[in-house]
Image (cartoon, rainbow, N blue to C red; front, side, top):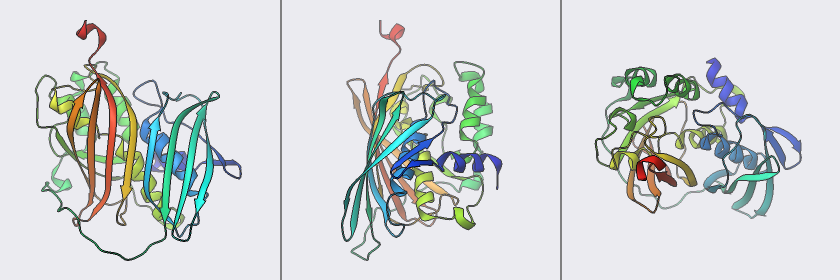
Amino acid sequence: MDATLQYLLDLLDLERIEQDIFRGASHPSVIPRVFGGQVAAQALVAACRTVDPDRLPHSLHSYFLRGGDPGAPIVYTVDRIRDGRSFATRRVVAVQHGQPIFHLSASFQLPEDGLEHQEPMPPAPDPETLPDGEEVLRRYADRFAHPAVADLLLEARRAVDLRYVAEPPFATPGRRREPRSQVWFRTNGKLDGDRDDPMLHICLATYVSDMTLLDSVLLAHGRGGWSVGDVVGASLDHAMWFHRPFRADEWLLYDTDSPTSGGGRGLARGRIFTRDGQLAVSVIQEGVVRVPREESA
């Protein structure tokens, strides 16, 4: 297994310090706070550890309350809200330095059959025809606010093979584009043995889901993003619905768009499809998206 993927799996393998209390480490981030996808994935792992393994997450709803400290551990406390015959509900609070930084509610369900329909998968080129993330980041490294940003982004994403279908926001600052973005992603390595757990695939997708979701908001306004330095922002809330089984170590298409922005906030929607066209996950997030203070003055 790739060493960087093993590092990410270790990051998600929380330490149990009491029956429903867990502790997790943090990954160094491009910005001076904990990456939102990390804290969301770890909180979901904590919730999963308190639920029977035959019940899988079908939805999560979360709020980012404070910027986390990437140099300090995070403690996750789980409340067992309800265990019903078909569904179970958990609430998780992530705490650092005595203050809550993140809140998550997750619902779990026993598998069952039911009526089915879905939106069709949008067209997208095969992932093998696209440049990998390192090639894209190196190509546009001169656009970043600091020379070290490309290396920091590479380090943060090294466990994931993430491929942009079109140029990312940091490639075209100053040019307004359709508020839509697509990326293919999968883990850099297969999950096998004890690691091949449906819950872990869901938690890994949760981790990746926060990487590019707000790109569609940036594209609408010709903004390059936090790495370029022409916006200031952060995730506010994050919701996901898990519809069908999928594997995080096989190619998944993440199709996102932004229906609106205003009041210093932008809304983004995402759909994650398996390569054979199954709609696996739906995502919605609102984030703070502000112009830098000196630009708005």
